[in-house]
Length: 172
Ligand SMILES: [Zn+2]
Image 1 (cartoon, rainbow, N blue to C red):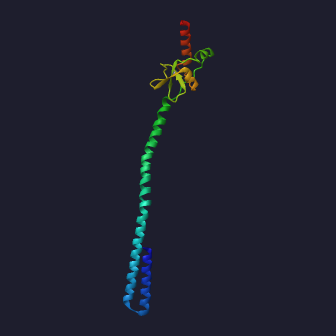
Image 2: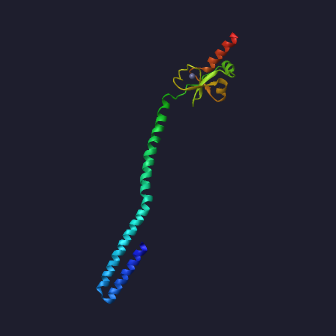
Image 3: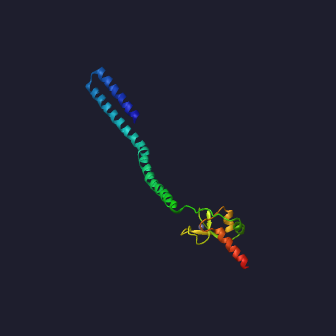
C-alpha cells in the first residue's frame, strides 16, 4: 500500500516534470490526479494498519481488565472481608488449662474421647461453653496430645478426665 502510494507520488512528480518541460496543462492535471490518488492510498493504508493493530491493542486492554477487574475484585474483596470479619468475633481460643502433675500423669495415656475444633489448638470435653455451636470432631486424648492439642482452660478436660479415671479406678 505504502509502496503503491510512493509509486503514485513518483508518477505525479514525473508528470509534473514532464508538464514543466513540455508546457502541456493536461500533464499538470495528471500530476494533481496522481498526488490525490497517492494521498488516498496513504489514507487507506493508514486505516488498514490501524484496523490491523486495533483488534490486538484496543479491545483487549479495554475488555480484559474490565472483565478481570469487575470479576475478580468483588469476590476477592468480598471473601477476605467476610472471612476476616467473622472469625475474630468468637475466634479467640480459651486459655490453656493449668494441669496438676497428678492429673497429667493420670490422663497422659488415656484414650478417652475429647473434642477438637478444626484449626483450634485446644481440646475440650463435651459441654464446654466455648464450643457452643462449633462443629467438633472427637479424638482420643492421647492422640490429641500427640497432635499438639492443649487442654482447654474453660472446661479443663485433663482434670475432668483424671477425675473420671480416678472414679472408675476406685470403682473397679
Ligand atoms: Zn473447652
